[in-house]
Length: 387
Image (tube, rainbow, N blue to C red; front, top):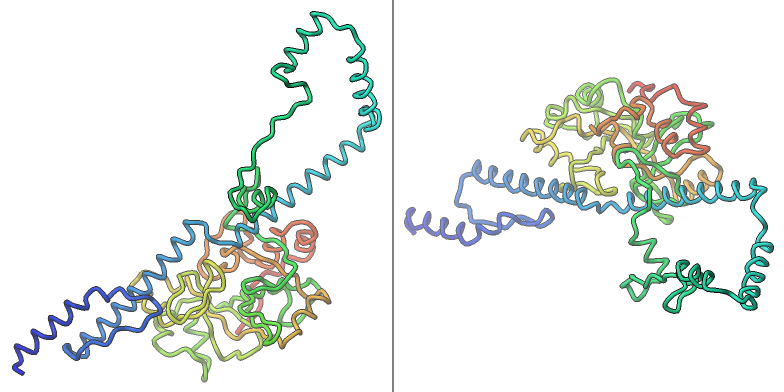
């Protein structure tokens, strides 16, 4: 085959499959004939990777815009329940403290006596006119009520369940930037807040649970022990770490945190960019892994190195161990906002935040007895450990 004819076939092949350039972020690249030089093929591969990363970023943005974070929905329910409990407590207190209101038996007897007297009373035109303006017209009396029809279209749910699932909490709003509430169970994406009495390397730590399984155990990473030096300095002092030279150069200014006592020569990444190839979604808006794809975004100037937290080491528990520690009160289990989790991975900080003490900040946001603990034991701050 002549060179010109070969180029024609290559061009035709590229036109036929040009629509396949936007493949799924998880599908392998289509094999194409060796029509270009090695440099051109590398450029095409990088283009594919960039498009997949852009798609992952767009999916994360749309997920945030559509409000698809089920954890925020649960946080609103918790806030509404708390508000209802407070309102109920105030109502009981006001009823018990009121001496002028008659008891229920007295109210009921007045209603009965009034009904009997109305039956045997003569009544006049004035009384009839008064009853009309009280609403006793058209077959209605003053005790008639306006029943709202059931607007629930789901045949498998009761009216109460529809209100719980579909109604927006009345007069209850949460700050999407900073919210936290206690949990009664373990789940991936929850945080362990160290008990104020816990010492050692876990003293006043916040641990993000990445995986939890009753049969295989649990893994997590400490997210509030930032080092005073960046990745370039930290990784350069490690001989057998998993950070190569290209990552050191791209993420030289990236922050580093002590992640736990297990495998301290290995680094993992925590970020909010999106579910790029090689990463894992912990929950909407928070991801771990995918450093090679994130490096590409840093080189494209679509991401800052400071938006990725490199975590040195991690924490691990054998099956049943973490549950026993929680039962003994070693940890407070909580759910927290993505901005709390990404505090040292480029998340915004507001005037209401305590930017140097994540442990106390989350406890304060949880309120109640947890806020009391935070006020009594805060002050040491997050940055207290050198690499």
